[in-house]
Image (cartoon, rainbow, N blue to C red):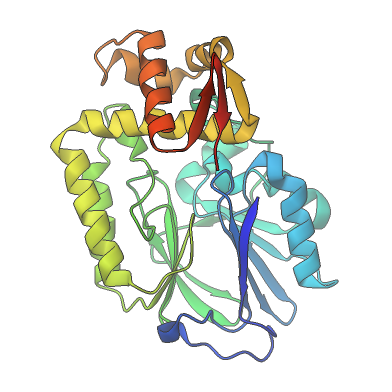
Amino acid sequence: MIMQTRTSGNPQAAPANGASGALPRGMRVFERGWLSANNVLLVDGDDTVLIDSGYLSHAAQTVALVESALQGRPLRRLINTHLHSDHCGGNAALQRRWQPQTWIPAGDADAVVRWDTDALTYGPTGQQCERFTSDALLHDGQALRLGGLDWQVIAAPGHDPHAVMLYAPEAGTLISGDALWQNGFGVIFPELEGESGFAEQQAVLERIATLDVRLVIPGHGAVFTDVAEALERAAGRLAYLRADPKRNALHAMRVLLKFKLLEQRQMRRDAMLAWMESATLIETVRTGALGGISRPALLDDVMAALVRAGAARLEQDLLLNQD
């Protein structure tokens, strides 16, 4: 579901004004529902760029949105802030439609060439992504010209070890992916498998604080300008998770089940248990960070949390998504 489309208006004429919350000239943001990451379209004459492409189940919708916005232009470049399934699930469909030059974080290059679905997390999380190819790599400190603006590539490990952000100093605009949302950030996945992620996420927040950012386009949720307040909220959230890593593990289990429910819309208990067993990351967390809790007990805990939060509704053994 598309929640909102935000645009600077005429991509050739609207002024940049990050301080007031207006998007830079030539930029359009498709704010998506939580199953698909936001898409950012930049247009400067024949230079057309899309950043992130949503989830596989919305791929046709993503192509239609981009096609409508481009008004007959081809899509020249496709950039991914990171390769979680909700950020690159439309890549293959966009490649079939326009053959854009596709840029991915350098750390994922080998896994994409081999199409290692375990390394790319699709198998372990029980999610889907159609195979795509890449043409160029994104490195920390790299400079790119996109949509008539100069952008800096900034490494953003924490949520994903290979993730990047894009920062345009002139416009004071940060495309943050899942490193910073208005009220938090993405699950710190490396910590779920015993790798460092909390420290990296803190370093990313500190790096953002050194930049002159006046407008943030997050991977999920609305574009926002209260950057200092968002950083403060994120720092508090990170401190809460670091104080007891089990909190991050339980949060991740709720997020993964909610994501699956967004995809399926409703699931019966036996189907959820089978999915949990097949998703090796869930098994790793269940038997590790969560102390070997039984699969049915974990499912009960996670379902109850989603129902309490208003994110799901339970009817006997059927769990239904609540938007």
